[in-house]
Length: 195
Image (cartoon, rainbow, N blue to C red):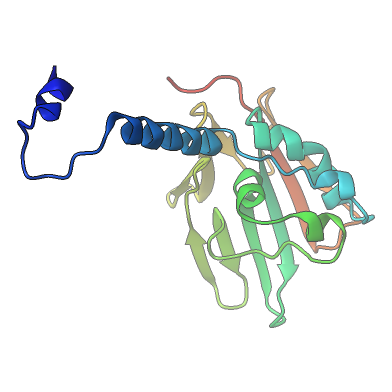
């Protein structure tokens, strides 16, 4: 009925588009929405060309992290380009979606801790940063000196304390023979999404 009124000329001074133009724009918007829903998952781990145990372990976890059935936190302690010892807890899925990992898996580039990671600490300067991501909420507990990461997928709290026993939902893998001073992988098996 509304369209009939517009066709007859009863409308405001706003520009009116034809039904065909409206349908065309609607189809374009629907196509754009579908493009955003179905993201192109870039699997770079198949191009693995390094002997670093960390990169080999991450290549095995890449697809599961991109599809959301696994949430991996990487702990790295290393020396930066200024010669300062730095460490960080890194959201692997977030980094996979925001960076091209081809050069990492080929051994051309090292993962560098960043202030924008879940948790970053510069051992020389004594500065620390905590930043939540789309996948994890960072919860620093200053009373008990604990650092927890809450999975936004299922609400599970991941305690990264090395003295804490792992559970069936979280596993810890300490890696040796890597290109880093220390490397640890925390895998969280995402069971269900929060409704």
